[in-house]
Length: 229
Image 1: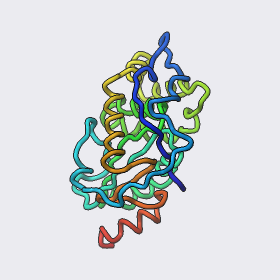
Image 2 (image 1 turned 60 degrees about the horizontal axis):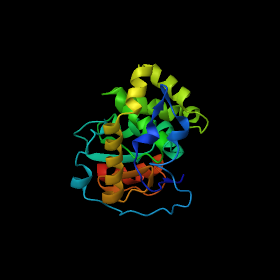
Image 3 (image 1 turned 180 degrees about the vertical axis):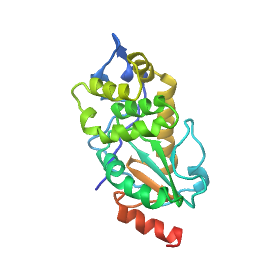
Image 4 (image 1 turned 90 degrees about the vertical axis):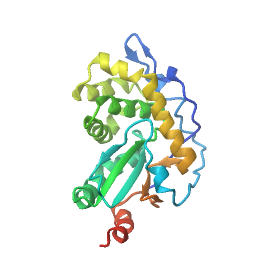
């Protein structure tokens, strides 16, 4: 399993505009979070300072697990990244059962949108609020094949959001929230500039970058020495 890479970041609210109450599907796909087909993966540092990595950003972290866990995994993910969906749908349930639910590990999810549709998904998860934010993220990954489409993704995205309690008004309001979009952009910029994140998913385990694609075997190999098992 490989990673999906980012292109240049050129933020602009007009990419998430509404017209006549309907989100412009065509506007979701170009800049600011455009994936450059010719992008070359930049390998970031193998380890980053834990104190810097754990500093809060403009948005609260989305966290699974105990704050007292011995090990912290920080994941940077994009809602439209197929490899991220694979991790959340196939690997995370086993990782959660083995390490997170047992209090050994906590997982912090941070948004790293690769395109505007991913930014829209991240915004909706944040607008769901509180504990619903992670639940919304899970649903979006589970149903990724249904809404990550180039031909008008908006109806399916709204259908998913409506099941989470959104109205058309709250859906539209969320996706035109300048401040929220800027906060997500700031988190992505920080990850790129300070921690060398350039593809998704990227995982740091107590500050050390996890090599490979994020399989359970790779996590086992990295976690067992830290947990003394």
